[in-house]
Image (tube, rainbow, N blue to C red; front, top):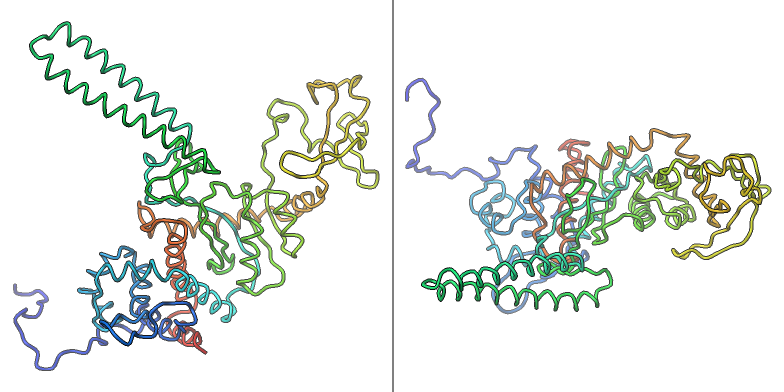
Length: 482
């Protein structure tokens, strides 16, 4: 092998072993992980096993396993079995854990048993970001994204799915019964073996029918009409792309628009975002330590009650209204074509007539609405463009002015939705890229929330290193325990 760079002889014995620290560069992110965890008060954070037991086999200190997990999520190694292997061969992990190599069961149990502590550590890092003055803009983008659960679609049941499967089973049973009848007539020599095989298939299909009937009865006790057999908290959800639904969780995140740091997150099993705006905005404001906050969200968050809840606590929301008018779709005037005159509490219709207040009513969604119409409707020349009924009734929520102010803010700041999209959607894309084409590794809402906190913590650590650089980040994390 002349004229090539040659490696060392594998059989060469060194008299003085090299220091493990020499293999880890000063700019290696693993040093940040080590410094950050060393400065944490793990007992106050809620971790178990901080104080060793007086008897029995000694256990690993929680700091060792926490470092192992943070490193794993920083480097796209989330599986406890893979972390076990990496601890035995990865020089960075040898340096980080002091050459300790816990077995996969110990690693997995740590994540399962210390969910609250891990979530507190994630929040503590966000507090550190606040202390570093990284949240100066007081503007967050809020969005939700669907993440797959361990549960497959075949092990998630709804009344509609059960009807469809039972129909398929009935067709299969009928096909086998027809095959039995044909075998009796045309294949007398082989009929016994084939009949036994077909009857066995029919028996199994009828057992499946009974199982589906049992699940149907169980569904009547579930408020959301769903049941997942592998992960009981996972739910079937639709995504934006047609036919791309999945069984999983809806992860909510509030992202700072200046540095793209995740300031608040939550894992839910509700398939839509309509009731999430005020909760996420309040959590983001508290995490950033701000008295005022601007929250940007997409149409899926448009909900009058949520928008009013934000305004009541000083949060300025920017949420576009969904374009779901049935009248507009049919080519008729919709509510936006009627002008509200506040001083008279009346609407002016496209024909110029005044629709006056008639009565108030409680809507099906529990909101109080005022109803308006004009007596000129029956003789109106453009009635066909307005309504198919005798009168065009206009409903106005008692706090409709809140929605009008939201629309006015959007009209003055049309770039708000572009800012939202380039802020939060990039973050979800990054997290899903790190996870790969896979699902959460844990089951149930609480444990999935813990797993998501590790993803968020790893993401925020990488962002802070990119923003401040290694030397400033190392100085900053040593402030955690101060």
